[in-house]
Amino acid sequence: MFGYKSNSSDALGPVEGTNKEWRLIERVVMANTLELRRGRRWGIFFKLLTFIYLIAVAVFFITGNSGSTTLGKTGGHIAVIDIDGVIASGELAGADAVIGSLTEALRHPDTKAVILRINSPGGSPVQSAYIFNEILRQRALNEQIPIYSVIVDSGASGAYYIAAATQEIYASGASIVGSIGVTAAGFGYQELMDKVGIERRQFTSGDHKAFLDPFTAVNPDEQVLFEALLSDVHQQFIRDVKLGRGERLIDSPRLFSGLFWTGSQALELGLIDGLKSTSELARELGYPQTVDFTLRPSPLEAFARNLGVSLAQGLVKFGVSQGVTLN
Image (cartoon, rainbow, N blue to C red; front, side):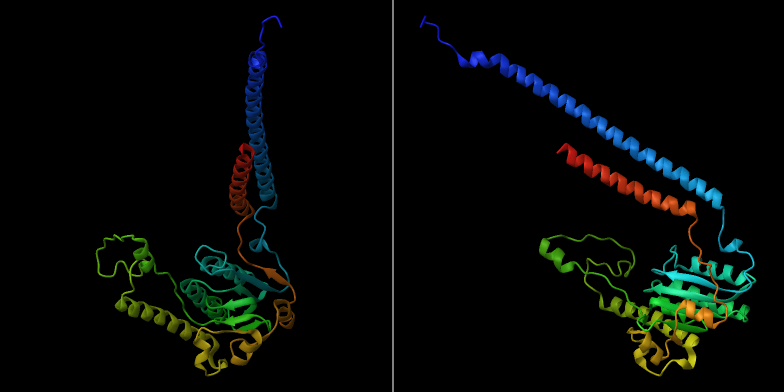
């Protein structure tokens, strides 16, 4: 009306500037808040780990070294040793652990018999052979203490190898028994590499140093050599099973074909001597009290192992949670 033309953008300018400043301040505050939350979470996490560690150390020193080695007089008991899991060096079902457990069990003056409680799919033929030979040696040194095997869910391959060294083998009717064979498997990627266009470059000294390389074609001569190697290990397996079981085995080549059977079928084949559990066998032997002589990690060792797993899980958890928060 008076010649003045209002400019809406100029009128809103200060407001927009103020909003931008507030948004910037809000972002800074939120970023600081997120950093404080992260720091608080990490603080709680490490305080919790420290608390658990102190409790574990206290329990370890309170309990001391209690175990089979400090067992007092029992008046007569059956020693039980668990062979659980894959038979491999450094594992609880490896030769060192099993032989150590067996030695401790036979050393106790009130041990009347030993039961190997087996639940294993097998594993290393070397470790199995070590245990097999040690059982035979201990049987000769401790003729008055019989050693039995009880197969729980599975006693296959190397696990049956071990059981064959004991006086008698028992299982459940539904247990998996046998699998007297040797296997080795791998993959071949040569055709895949050819399709993708990848060139394999390998330098060796020795005609067979790259033996079983999955990126090259199978050499017929090496295949024959490897099959002969597996056959030799298989023959050792068969020899020791026959040594342990003797005439109780039926005369059938199917026993050593790598097949496995239920406990009921294994009884008919002579692979086992009866269908019994550990407690049933202990009662029949006249000593229902069983004592676990399985060598296990100390509380501190077990805690350290679990702590490592927990720490890794915690790191993953916090990493994932932070990623979600930042998004």
